[in-house]
View (cartoon, rainbow, N blue to C red):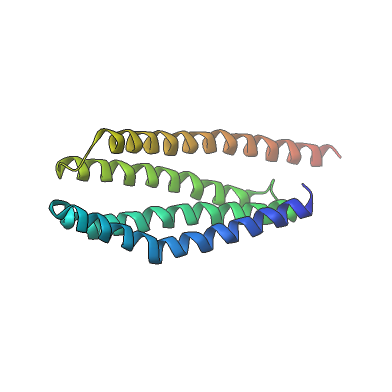
Length: 158
């Protein structure tokens, strides 16, 4: 992969991380306060909503940091090494955690009678996407394992 592309991707990840941090610090609490103000019957969900939103964004940040690290391995031409598996495994676990967090939010909102059809569809979509990405990561992990094995076999032949 061309070094400029890797550099551009890393710069984009840094920008996304900064924007996510700003969202955690400023946007989420403001949105939650606005919802609580407009819907006093849901005010008790403000703090759990902020905490859940922050945790979700932290999970996104973890995935971005893992991708950043994998790009570093690509640039160093070490992507086909056992070290890459650790980062891929973290991405997999993080995606499952995100799906579980969305499922938990779905249950909390349903129990609190704060669920409407659009939120239900978004929650189901979020869980489906998170599980789908986790399964895709499993497939990519298998391809990485196969490529590592082929590279080791080739090095033994040469």
